[in-house]
Image (cartoon, rainbow, N blue to C red):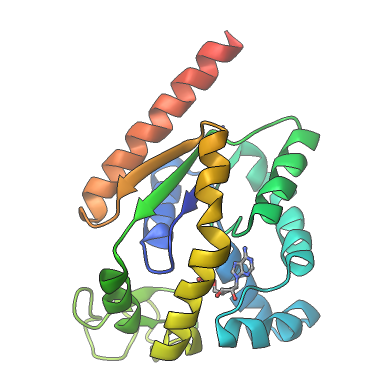
Length: 225
Ligand code: AMP
């Protein structure tokens, strides 16, 4: 069982790393942004309430997020662990997560911060194209699909997310600085924070994350022995 949080600005590679880790270890990758987008797509009440915040690049209010995440974390697959991506995003969310895990008798093993400079973030996000059908992600320069504008996996037409347009990207980065960056201090204070350079390439970053996860697991086992 391993529970980790991936932290970092939008475009730092959290989603890529989390889904690779899910494949390697069979631990569910739980991405609050993906859950919200599925609600928007299905036009649920939550989706209708969240959509205007997401389109502006603002955070969705904690009350909506906390209910959604509590529900997801209570599903059977999340009992064997989870890789959280995009949640928590505020200190209030981190505190709520801590309480929730305490209630079910577990805790986080590690929080991994992917550090990436702002210029690189802008380059990554503005070139990103997403498949609205299966959520596969491409990049016009670094990871183009085989046929321009078409998803390799399911042949749907790729889109640029509304929140990946330049002015919304800038807003999301501001919101990140103000509301999510303070989490670094919060988790450093709990001796859970590990920092890795998010520009060393997907495979190298994956190896660094695997090392952190293996050490966190070993020290958790030592403590219970
Ligand atoms: P992401 O795909 O993680 O970048 O999330 C896309 C958008 O969903 C964000 O810009 C927010 O509007 C919203 N969102 C995702 N996760 C959270 C969260 N934990 N708290 C508040 N809003 C969130």
